[in-house]
Image (spheres, rainbow, N blue to C red):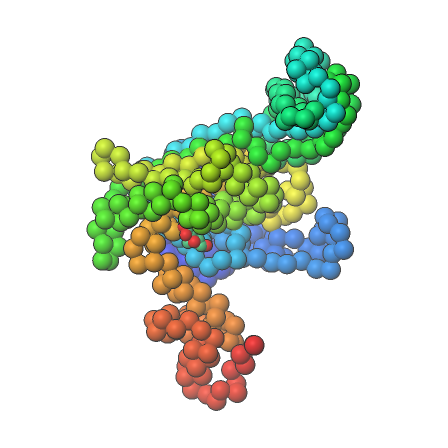
Length: 434
Ligand code: MEV
């Protein structure tokens, strides 16, 4: 995209104007956004061809994360998430990060691991030697199984043999899947090669499937934030910075905290994964397995202060995302999300998703290290509570503001506020659903 991902006042605009602003920023027709998003991104006839036993579709909010600049390039970032404050928090933190130059990111090649399990291997040492000797033949067989991938520049890149003990072995075929998520490709490779692998090793074929711990396909993202950007009404930037670093230490030393810390990261990552039609279960499985790779569950992102006093965040995680095939073939909403984001490779998409994850983490730690998350969270949650009691139009913001201000974000408080606002009898307001 040519324009900045910074659109001041975006959140104050009505939905129609936001669509127009996004369309203008990324050179799309507003009518395309209107058409695709009015249908919730997916119509029921298409949904029925996608999975089984369909009786309808199920919508979630489709929002835009702002201020995201990765390696000097701006992206408007579609995010699909049901949790209030995730989009606002990530956009807000991305703005602070932008002041320090934005995110710096790099990525591995898109290498997925195809696993072939063998059992009853009589002589694992000899089996390993024979498999190593046949490496070139096996890789050529793998390439032959995915010819179209090879034509797109991908294909088999390596073979690993692991002895799991008691006659159990596993052969990994490393496959560069280019712009695909790659699950189908590497499952095809595993099924095609398994009989030959078993014959060479002298064992019996077991499972043939990808590994979701795709640790050859990591993204690495970092940022430097000037402390002044972190200041709140009541705390200096340096104090907030130190609080974020302390929060990071907590996660580094305690798996109970690390799990929540990583959940905050995945708030951002998953929202981008969902918006772009990717497999968030695969991403979650890979991220958490990677977080425990050294034997103890650890934070995916950590924060420290550098010599110039800047707050520095770094994160690594495996991300198997695609921009071709899979859901994208059938889901107009996911295709639209990719157009808005303006990424040209799957790995570029992964760097943007990771950047949003790091921004989400900073937003959470900054809130936790200062006033706590409940005030901001409740202020946003108040709007859904207002809608739940029947507030419409302007009433929503007014009821939400009143109950948030009173720190009483409950259905009963919202009903009372709405009754007062309408100056009407309680009976005209939607009853509380128990
Ligand atoms: C809530 O969805 C995410 C947080 O709990 C993350 C964190 O504690 O770092 C706020």
